[in-house]
Amino acid sequence: MAIQGQPPVELPTFETAGSTPSNDCEIIYTPSSTSSMSAMVSSSTVSPASSASVSIRQYIYLMPYPFPKIAPVPYSIHLPSKNPLNLPTRPYEPTSTLVLTSPLKTFVDLRFFKPTSAHETPLPNAPHSDDRKRLEWGFAGSSASKPIDDPNAQPGEEKWPGVTYSKWTQFVDSRFPVGYKDIPVDEGLMYPISEFKTLEHGHMFHPSVDAVKTHEEMWFDPPVQATSHSGDGKKICVVLRAQDDVAGVRGVIVRLGQFCQGILKIGDGTTVERWEWGCEGKEEGEKTWRRTARVGGLLIPCSAAFREEVLGMGAKVRYGSYEWVVEEVWAWE
Figure 1: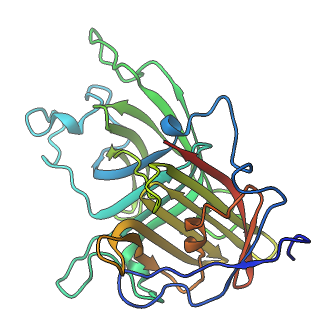
Figure 2 (figure 1 turned 90 degrees about the horizontal axis):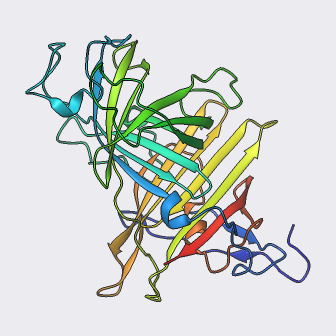
């Protein structure tokens, strides 16, 4: 129901990577009681420029669990010259994995398997794609980190500087039903490698090998880009959330810089989308948003997150049968 004096607004659709619009369902937006410009998150302790992150996984490397104490951590960065456990000499990356984390640490993590045959597209992206085998994992929730002394330093060696312990708490997970209480803890130690690279060392159950394994993942954090048509150089982050536990519905959308990702789960059914900025629009030289990946048959209003000029904290977006609430809106230079 719209707030009196502020009628619902129909938001536009955006093109997919092909010519078919991704959102063929009406999106109704109910403004918050305050204007969007004054309804952005305000916190003296949070700097969006330093706390928000785009993270692209460059590789994963599986190792024995428990991990032998005699082996160095990090391990994979020394390959192939140093390999005391006689493991495979090269890490690999079987997926296209992207994590978007908001300034208040809400994240969406989507992992699509890369094509294994010539007839497969680089990413699954049919308008109503049900190619579930291409979704390796999708989940969203909140993350937290704290600095710690490196617990894996070898005797007589200097401790690795800047190590943090990180934990990701799932709100919605493609591998588990909505509201499932025993989702395994996702945690790891983060080792800074360079200005834009961080190595994660941890362990978990890996379905690909049907076993718990120690793993190392190399993450690359590219700079967040501005995506404004006005050319004002502002970088934007928007977070929307859907939750109706009685109906078994949970979803999260995070738009951050040049990327937007969403996940929606109803019972055991999961739909995920990834959008990217920078594709050519209808006019020469114009840039626009296009959907580059999709799996599932549900409706996700990612395109609503591209209207930051009308979105405000607490605003609601009704798309199909479900309501999404705007939880964060940030803009910075």
